[in-house]
Length: 336
Image 1 (cartoon, one colour):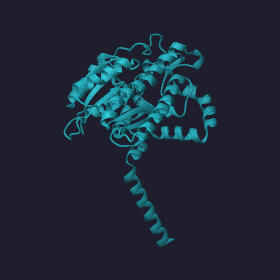
Image 2 (image 1 turned 90 degrees about the vertical axis):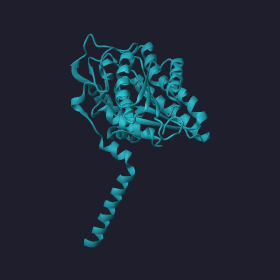
Image 3 (image 1 turned 30 degrees about the vertical axis):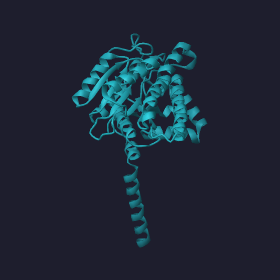
Image 4 (image 1 turned 120 degrees about the vertical axis):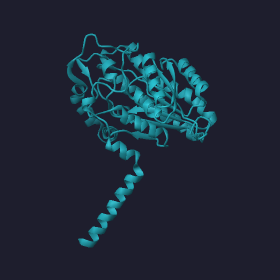
């Protein structure tokens, strides 16, 4: 369904953080459906490459190089997208930046910057989307969350704080939409460790190269879940078994998780390689280069998640389980 509600019209979609990582994989997923996509990130060259991928799939794309920490720029981009392609159907907030370091080694300016992008960037994107969707009483906003939105880990206090904040403001807005009986849908897709370029360009003060906490998944796993979430009315989607374990484990045994991560969380987030002295850093400025969806951990990353497939196909999974239980009950009564 497209911008005017006509079946044959392509979807109009905005993706922040579209140049690389999970955002780039999301762009590719929507491009396969020939969507018209607004591409937001700071690096024009990567956005042009993403645009070429969209057009190769038969879709349309609009390059919008900007910093999501600039609310006016985000609002302007939303208007440019609608002027070019028509009414907005889906807005996906994904842009982020971070710093790997113990809290006491992070400066106020660094913490502020990571928060402005990773939290306020979502707020500004949501504001731009809601401004357009509320009067039309339709549309979907997808927030890219994380297991770290519920279970924080050491060395990533700005990122964890921002992801917690995203859940907080999203839940508040969702209550308002329900009160207004709005048909605008708001959902959060919580991700596990992903193999993206952020670990090669995030600011770090660790002695060794940063890495996602294993097990690691390819960004296409996330992209498939995001596409599904944009077209189904699920409140939250947990991607991968580690995400579910982290979130539910926090409810059951938060103190144990504190102690476990205090002991294991430092090494789990570093490879055995030392940090290069000329390592790029994208906290305040974009890093140039031919980065795309994948990072450097492909050899150890999973291209699929059984949990994610089952989570997105609950009805057939439930039917199969019910059939197995019925068959087992029948056999038990007949032969035991």
